[in-house]
Amino acid sequence: MKVTLRDLLWLILVCGIALAWFNSDRRRDAEIRSIIDRHSKWQNEWKAETAQTVETYRKAALDPVAYREFVYRRNQEVSKARQSRPAPTDE
Image 1 (cartoon, rainbow, N blue to C red):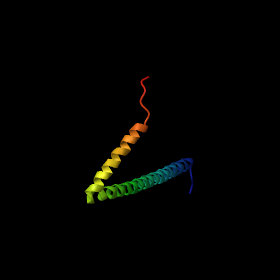
Image 2: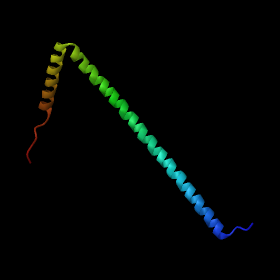
Image 3: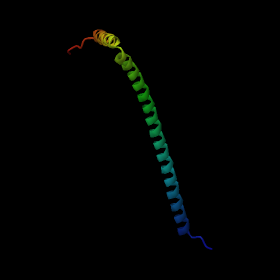
Image 4: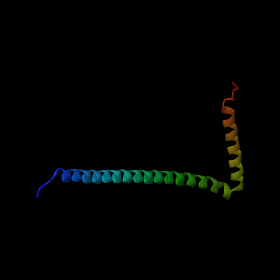
């Protein structure tokens, strides 16, 4: 069996294509894993934030007096935040 230069070139070409396919497949898997991890992180953050918001409003919904106090405190916090903000300057 005689191996010619053309056979070696074809072998190199096939090996190069196979390695490129393997590398792109690994890169695609890593990208998909990072997207899934990021989605899981966001989902957990949203769940925690939603649970905190629901708990806050649940107290207000069960007791109307507490709701009025909650709104009053919230309005005070907003007004304090507005007062502590520096005034815009026209330049």
